Length: 511
Image (cartoon, rainbow, N blue to C red; front, side):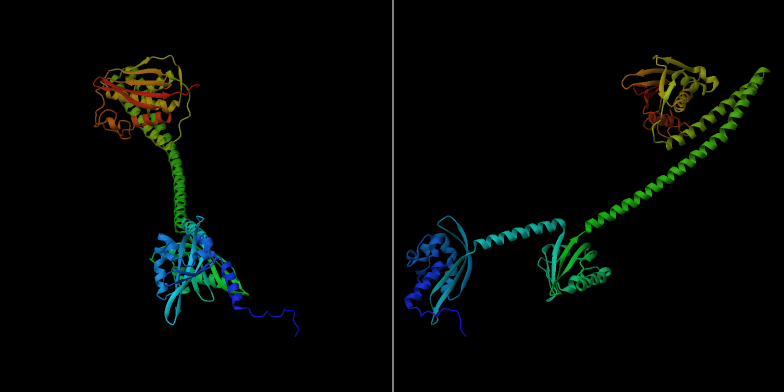
């Protein structure tokens, strides 16, 4: 059969063979040399020029310690001794070059053994600087991925379906709390899934292998240390020639996220219950207010009728000069007035406790406020109340009914705890800082006991004396009324010559 190949060349002469071999070895980038037992060089290629700056002619005959120098030779000497001992040596070394370049090298010392005797060794040194740079870049990339995986709690895994070989990243090992580099069997890997979810996990994997459908599922897992966690598992199948050959995917530890979701759900459930409870309380408060209104009407109306009847009786008895009977009627009227005041206070406390928003005040005549509050006092006591005006201000912004209630309670306390017949002074003034109407109510009683002072304005406290009987609502009502007005009540003077309680009613500029 005819061919287009050229005819073979005649065999090379020995000198030509040597010439070709020299050309081959001199063109190799690796250093090639032969060193005898005395560590003198017998052969070297041109690569030594690049590495050490010496030509082959300068290298041949040189002593190895002289070539490598006092730093490099002691590092290589154990491998030299090993090669002269008849054992092949392979090692890595950084070789400094004449151009200042640090070359990573892979050195290979091969003993030259003839008739069982080591006559020297052959050297092959190959530069692997580029390979080392790639390895370092890969390590940096792997370290970055490992750090990222740690932060995100995500690790990768793969399974060779042909060999059933599993491979887990370090982060997967950390998630499952097994030693780094652990390679589980397929059964062991599935056993980490909590028993109640194991069948579902198997079905997902088998379905994925059969159909190529990837999976993304949240599973409960029990780690090697017995700790229960939650993971999100991602996986899919790789095919070759239509057959499944590999599973690969990722695992993310989402335990903390699940805990937060559970806490959030619990918080939302609790908030919903609280909202429902608040709505129920609002309904009950509304019903209570309505019931109180009904009660107030049903109780006040008969009392008002009885008070009017007593007043008519008093007028009639006075007309016929039956003064003893008139006095008894007067006492009955006073009792009726006290009962109505107690009812008003009780109803007021119920309303004030349920109220959270400030009052909407209206411009009110101050003298009218004083007149109606004084008129609420028993008739025979009204003459004891003196008004001192230190301001020309005629009106102030307030809720008239609430302020009347507050002032009435202060006057009632002052009259009650003052000596019979002693005056009660109401002083009206104003202030610029803050802009306010100031109402001082002063009595001439013995003062407030020290034991009462810390809770003077609290519900259940008694105005002047701890031994005093009653519900202790009066000063508490005053406090709540002033709070709803944005103002305050305070004790400004307390001593054996009397007590002064001050109402500071804040006024908004322009009103």
